Every structure is written in structure tokens, then in C-alpha cells.
Image 1 (cartoon, rainbow, N blue to C red):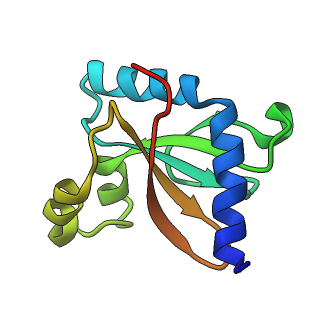
Image 2 (image 1 turned 60 degrees about the horizontal axis):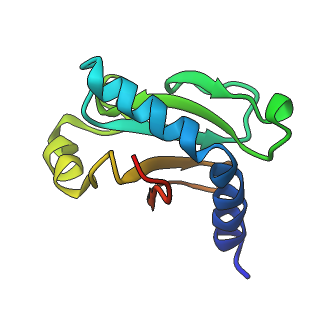
Length: 120
């Protein structure tokens, strides 16, 4: 199994344990008009400059920490260029049905859309 597949499997296991909380946070970000494009930054770093800490892996006894961020933060920090905003929006899946994960690791960084398995 490739390293990225192992990471995806590991992330999926962790995210499944607190999926209901992530759905609640996603809804809150949208309802409070912070953004219509919530992004969960999934990482194993001590500190990440994207978003606000949401789940600490050590405290949650998981392998991955999670920060909550959004499209506008990614644009402000130049992770997504202004030229790519419309492409990102066009590819963004409905936030009430899918979580947008930004998997951040030393080897790579990639967006993943994972369906919420619970009903909103």
C-alpha cells in the first residue's frame, strides 16, 4: 500500500470517530456566515498556521489533529491563489453532505472530499 493510501486510511479512521462534531462545526461556520466553504485541515504537526485548532490528536488519542479553516483563509494565506478561487468553488461539494479535508503532511498536501455518513 502506498504511503498516501496509508495516510488516507488513517485519516478516515480518525475522522469517523468525530464526524458528528465536524458536521456540527461545518454547519456553524456556514450558519454564522463565516464562509460557505469550510475546510478541515488534517495534520500531524505541532502547529499549523491554517485555521484554528479544533481537535488535538494527543488529547483525542488519535493520529491526526484537525483545524477548522475556510476558503477565504486559504486565499489570504496564499494556499489557494485568487485565480483559482472559482475553480475551487466549482469543485467544492455540498458542505452539508461532504467534509472538505486538507490533508497536510511532510510529503504532500491535498484536498479530499469525504461524505458525511450521518444524517444532518
